[in-house]
Amino acid sequence: MNTRYPHLPSEGGEEKIVYVRPVAVADLPKEVQAQAGGLDHIYSVNGADGTRLALVANRQLAFVLAREHDFAPVNVH
Image (cartoon, rainbow, N blue to C red; front, side, top):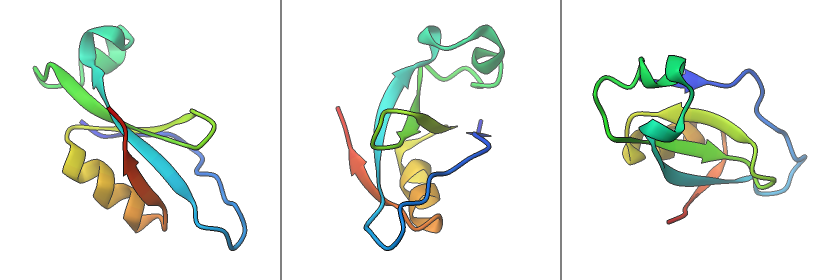
């Protein structure tokens, strides 16, 4: 289950940080829950302002996605 949001922010030449955190599938909209494949939780990649940029199935994928888009991922609990 990988849902990408249509925009990723750009911050010039500064290091771009995103925050990766677990999200309970039950707290998500029904259409997203249907795509979760029976998982209890998934991971959200969020911009510095808290904007959700992507939802992915696991933490490792969240970090890979962030790095592929030249972001520095930070784990949030």
